[in-house]
Image (tube, rainbow, N blue to C red; front, side):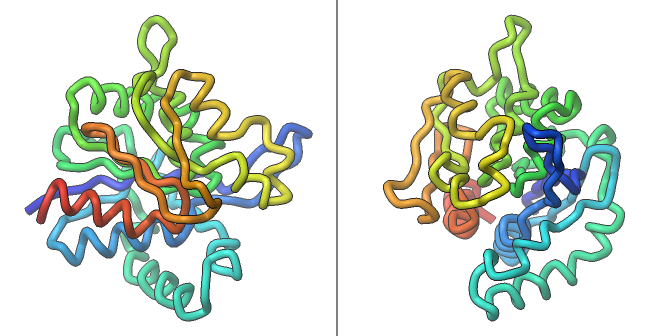
Length: 233
């Protein structure tokens, strides 16, 4: 049986450049859809967070921004099935990424608050990249790579092809206009070969060897599909 580790942000807010905070967490669809698709394909999935803290779902992802009412109901119902795993996740510092065929980071603005600076997550990513083991980041989750640095200060994905939530998409969120930094810009500044869909909020997936990335919530399904195509059941 294939095994996946979902590493989820433990943040419940996002600190903006004026010092104010915006409620956030993980984006419901980005956890629920890939998790369901992998599980239905026969995978075993564990969930871990920094400190083993129960993750917070971004309530906006369960509202109108989460899609049609039917879609939101499906996502909400599936998260309900995961209540036990989400209430008591594993402590990220206690897991061994070598035990997993895939490490998957769902998005939401949460990763920009904690995982972007988390040394445990950063070290895990660096090891995973060095060993060429499959790892995936969705939407804002590529922020976690900024904590994965070589001794010379460069990030472990420098020179690799990736996507992630675009600056154009970020501008659609009023709170994000006060962000300290944006994902697309920072990835480019750190030497990532960033690309995106021509139209905002359309599905877009980039695969570069062991590195899988999806641009936005709409990419949740396509990213999981590509992972299953490559890694199997």
